[in-house]
Image (cartoon, rainbow, N blue to C red; front, side, top):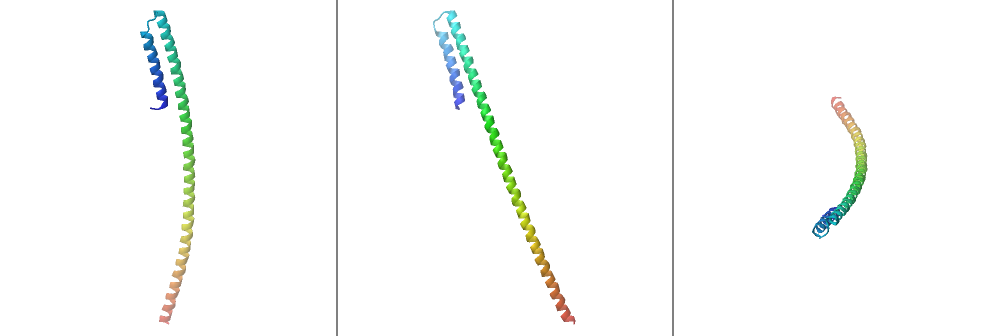
Length: 125
């Protein structure tokens, strides 16, 4: 059980025990009513304290959640930027390789055509 639930359960049990003890104590009606009223006031104070504690915990959790979301957003942006850089680098490399291969292929085709033309000229001529 989480500590905050333990605290709430403890306070609730303490208050219930105090009320039961007051009801079974042989006191005058006026004294019993006063003690019950005091017990109810104390229980109200404890519940108010518990509500404040829970509100503070909720605010803390909210703050921590927002911090985690912001860190995650920055990490995602960093990863996307790195991925974009990697894609751009790969495209530049691919373009350069394609240009080199196209130039080599063009030279090879020119050489083949020139050689074929020479052989054809030799055979015809």
